[in-house]
Length: 429
Ligand code: GLN
Image (cartoon, rainbow, N blue to C red; front, side, top):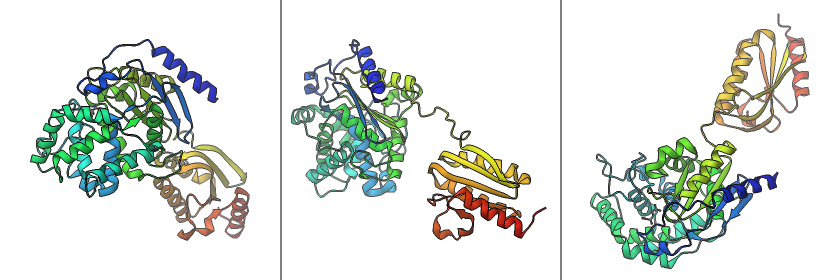
């Protein structure tokens, strides 16, 4: 299996190796010094297994791929309200370095363009620029599972030529968006953009987001699922700048590109992808990076809006071990839609049984909405003169302290014995 996936990535890299369209970013002079042929692809599974192909260990500067991570750190440290007061979440359809703020709020339109990214830096609480940069670097490193190094040459080169970003920072300062000195904030922004990563690092960072803030390799939670949900949201709507619409249609994964040639893409719950190829299109996105992601998404069916079969495949089997006792075996992941369907089927068949036994032993994950529906279903059946039992050995549906102990069983057999007892005590019909 692993070899198949590996071969698949190798074939993909070979397929696009000959593409030489695009140009190196030249507004940061040092970036014109990199080897334009570099091409690396890494895919991390949600449990941290890496598939690497091509120049997957070539280092390059993270540039704008830093933006979602600093935004996440700001959300983590000061909370959504404080962040929302300074940075919007509306796609701007503008170039990454547009000198702009929202007409009404006078704050950056979103955290993925430079204006929003500079504002994110200023939101990370710290006593000074060095501490702020250390926090940022530590956070990225915790996502990547290794300490990231800093590229002094690229940093100096960007700092020496960064008039446009200086214009943005001073504009933000004039609107009261930056709580700190604009030059200091900008310096930290240039430093974060100059951290060196590989496509493997990006895949790991992506997998950490895919796992809702838990780095699958280290097992460490780096931030909350809520922070990740917000971060991925802005990556979907704004991560690829003025190509965001094309990207979502064709690739369908939250993603972020950088002018260093990297792209990180995330399939929530499933994968982190890192690509490196420094030749860029006119919007500042890696040409081969975009091509590879499009192919990966198409051929492996990774588009996040692919309509799944979750709600149809929730019920694995229905059987009646004794008369008027019906067992519903569930499996897979149970979310709202799947639980709603189970509740409706049980409801529709309620004339045909006196006791319904819902077996959740094979459920992998369940969310609160599904949990509440299943618990409510048991209560509803009780109110209608029937009984609803749940076979839930690990108590994933009904937690032990909820006072439902008489309807929760460890095995289907125990539930059936109890159902027979109920039927003998109160013959229904
Ligand atoms: N450091 C770069 C800049 O601010 C990052 C831009 C990018 O990667 N799109 O211009």
